[in-house]
Length: 94
Image (cartoon, rainbow, N blue to C red; front, side):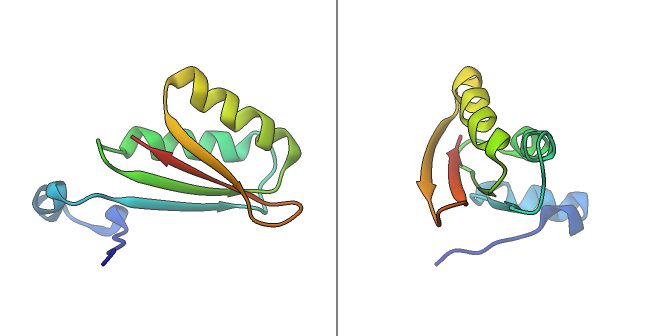
């Protein structure tokens, strides 16, 4: 079973209690143009702890090139999966 929690809506005491959970972050960037997908993904990556995952959907051609380059340079483990002819999903793990 997978539970998705939006940690932005939690108080600090609750955040401490869920430190033992693995977080799944999802960002649909299909409507965003470069450089916004990279900027927002970097913000998510800063929040991620070991074991967390982030799923990013991208349609912008520049972001499709820049995002994997950035993730490789930063040492993240990720997998790129084409969802449609124009949209890819990047599964990032820490």
